Image (cartoon, rainbow, N blue to C red; front, side, top):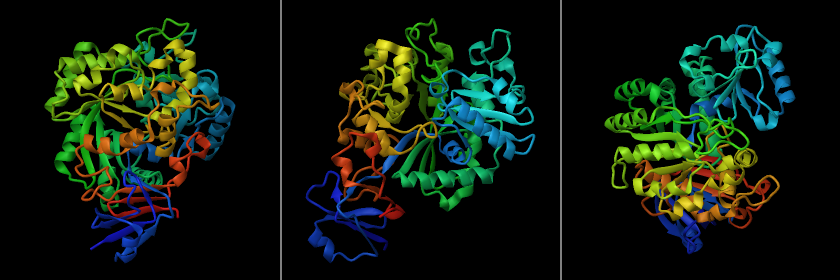
Length: 504
């Protein structure tokens, strides 16, 4: 019988106890320190007065892409000049005719959108395609852009310069297609997923809801028993048929198909999210995808497949359109389906109560606040108060879960918690503090609620009979989260009674 005793801990929600006994991956008992001294077990972990929480559930990330990005060109937080230097160095190290991929660039740091001319000056003997931080734009050189079938995309997705030529930055569907043209072997992708798994364990994450293309699924199969992360998958609608075939043919431990993902707008950073009123000092309303009738038809089709709907909607217009479509298909809290709006960043007052009434989950990412505050001030002005309405949603009765959107942002849950609890900008000023959550509310959105949402049974709580998946964090986590740079690191991660990360 596998057994693990964790003692000398501050146990979340259990002030009368300081130790937990785990047997065969299940929480068997809570003990005081005197009782813990008498317990016999195979492994013993001294928490040294630190805090024990349920392990974290990242409710929105791109697992395989996160793993790949860890070993690709990283432009996060860099200026345009610094990015060009890094790309130039990468080109020197890369064989001619090969792809240079990665990204993470942001218009805020560049000051403007970049051009293909800048990349062509570095190389036209490579294919260069670099995703923006939010993946809704791709910056490419001429050889890469020439691979696109331009007739598949709208003019908004393919902006042109004054001479009528493509600028070198493409958006939305064109961006995703261009960024995915560099082929990755099954073995390489499996290695990337395993690398991502190790990093997530370092952040205390044992469960994920990941957005994937069906062609990534064989890499999970190749991992076999090495896949210890519990992976709930939302498949892009374009590859649903392939995903159905895969799951019909293969059973992979810890991998499940939960939902179908589709986009109905872009992002705030790319200035493509669909808004009810134009961005400040412009006539631009963002990009809206799918006609309303087509959206309803797609929602019905997904339900017929017995799967949940995970619809990407960031702007207030997109959120309203998604809620309208859910209403038309008869979504309600009593349904067996647990449909979700991914991001739900900007919500109009009139739509707040509709999440609860329709039983639609708000799947949100507090960590995005870090970059979005400056962008929101520039693009939205007085409408910034519509963004990240955590408290308003909870008070309306809505179900709220939190994730990271990695690799767009870090999957560090403790950093995400800072923005949910503190909502401070880079100068330390509180940003719309009425939407701040308590520490307890934030923990639930990262633990208990997402586990319930994907029907994982007795998981996400520190209770007897529940799965023994826990994370140990420094005791300062409960007393001082006022400054982001004081956000502490995870000390240990336990998954089903097994220590998968330890830094004691």
